[in-house]
Length: 167
Ligand SMILES: [Zn+2]
Image 1 (spheres, rainbow, N blue to C red):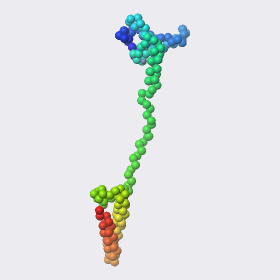
Image 2 (image 1 turned 135 degrees about the vertical axis):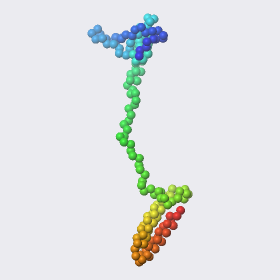
Image 3 (image 1 turned 180 degrees about the horizontal axis):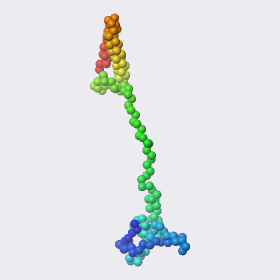
Image 4 (image 1 turned 90 degrees about the vertical axis):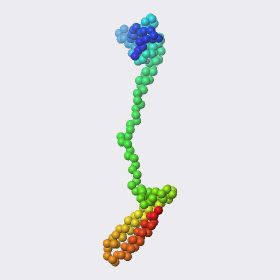
C-alpha cells in the first residue's frame, strides 16, 4: 500500500503520474508510482506496493526494482520432481548364513566376523547333513531289520553331526 502519511504529515492526494512518453492522444501513466500531495504542501512520490516514498521520483523507480526482483522470485523454489515411487528398500537375503538357531549368542560373542561366517556356513552344512541323516535314519527305521545296519550308520552320522553343532 502506498504511504498515507510521510514523516507524520498526512497524504492528502495520491494521483497517477504521466510518463514522459505520454501524449495527448495516448495517455501513459506510471503504473507503480503515485504522486503524493502532502498536507504541508510538499510533493512526494510513492511506491504503490509499499509505504516507500521519496521526494525524487528516480529513487522510487530504483526502489521498484526490489519488487520486481521479489516478484520474479518464486515464493517457493520449484521442487525437483520426486520419483513417483520410493525405491523399495532392499530386503535382506533370505538365506542368512548367520541365522542359525543352534549357535548360542554367548558363543558368537567370542568369535570375530570371519570365524562367525565360517562357523555359520559350517553349521548350515552340518544342519543339512543332520536333516539328511535323520531322513535316512527314519527311512531305515521303517524298513526291515536288514536295514538296521544302515540305520545305525545314519544314527552314528547324526550323532557325529550333532556333536559338531555343540557350542
Ligand atoms: Zn515499494
